[in-house]
Amino acid sequence: MKLFNANFSPNALRVRAVALELGIDLEVVEVDLRAGGTKTDEFLAMNPNGKIPVLQDGDFVLWESRAINSYLASLKPETGLYPTDAKARATVEQWSNWQAIHLGPSMQKVSFERVMKEKFGMGTPDQAVIDGELKNIEQFLAVLNTGLEGKDWIAGALSVADFALASTFMYRVPADISLDAVPNVAAWIERLEARKSWQDAYAPVKALLG
Ligand SMILES: N[C@@H](CCC(=O)N[C@@H](CS)C(=O)NCC(=O)O)C(=O)O
Image (cartoon, rainbow, N blue to C red; front, side, top):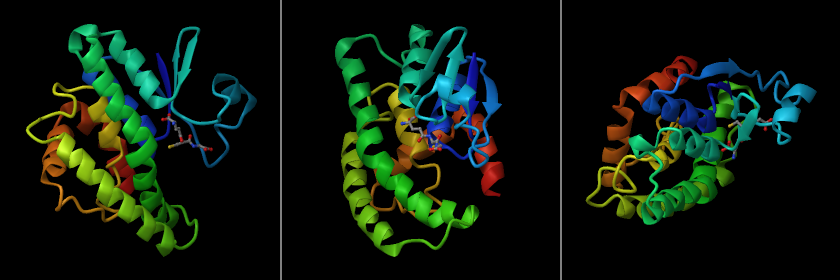
């Protein structure tokens, strides 16, 4: 299986980490986004959105990182990363969707303003955007902190939802997003980041951040 990837992307990070957690060997194809690598006819034929990550499994092509992770984990049901029980699976979907729609975009906007703009020479940070999104993040983190009360993992057992959520935190240190007020979140992210799968998936990001 091939994964079309970019190392700075949280969406790609969650797929690399889940594949490693599952013991699925992916051939990682690095796509140069800044050179238009996602806008070629060949790439757009795979993903008309012109975005990574994309998974290619023979003739089967899949985009959207959380769908890719559900597919990969479904190939290894014995791991329980994408549970088959209806309620457990719905809880995993609940947190994965919440990450995609609520927490993720706010964290990404602050990371873009505070980290990516400087890294890639894309102008000065917009303080109004940062201030607005930090308010949203404060509310979202409180929700996640409550969700993690008394639990090691967000859906009870380790699942693709933990990886969906965790990738959102990949720039929290350079983006100066504090977890001091949300101890359950701080302990959970440390737990996840201690996993070998995460450390291996994160290694290219570390190299990028210097
Ligand atoms: N919802 C998508 C988002 C994918 C996405 O936004 N990918 C970004 C990198 S983080 C991208 O490829 N951007 C290239 C572009 O927009 O030209 C997913 O989860 O896979």
